[in-house]
Amino acid sequence: MRLVEIAHQEISRHLNPGDSAIDATVGNGADTSFLAERVGSTGRVYGFDIQSIAIDITTFALKTRKLLKQVTFFQESHAHMLDRIPQAEHGQIRAILFNLGYLPHGDKSIITCKDSTLVALGQGLTLLAPGGVISVLAYRGHEGGEDESDAVYEWTRSLDPARYSISIHEGELPQRKGPVLTLIRSIS
Image 1 (cartoon, rainbow, N blue to C red):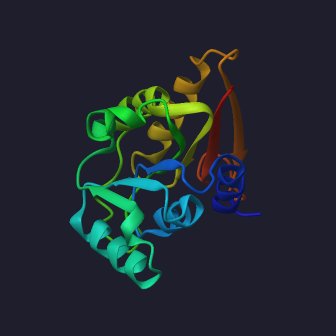
Image 2 (tube, rainbow, N blue to C red):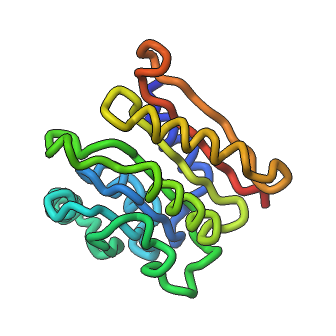
């Protein structure tokens, strides 16, 4: 099973119609679409991306699938999610997805960075509902990817095991170059 499928399978266990979720890295919209389907017309998805092209691509995909009305976009870093998510949603977000790296088929020089990712992950803990999940898919094969992946791993080691359970799934590529999926579950 691909790591994206594992992430979606895990999120499906936590996210139901009417819930709220965050796509911390909108990209080409696959995760945003998945989340919008899961929360349904009564739920809410908040999507973050620094690139307008990513939001444009995702908006088109969501319109085509009639999923746009339950999505709110922010063209800015995921490191600002705590300021952008309405206060009433703090502690209520059931799932947060990070798909780190660069925009597929886009400018490969524009990448997620460990500093903003770690800030966003910390904010994600504040936003996450009891029993919620954070999914972090890190790609290590590009410039800066291995450092970001290592930083995420070190950050997870600082989490209280009485409050969070962590699982790590490796991709099929040779170690240190392939993707790695980290799932952080809030223990309710």
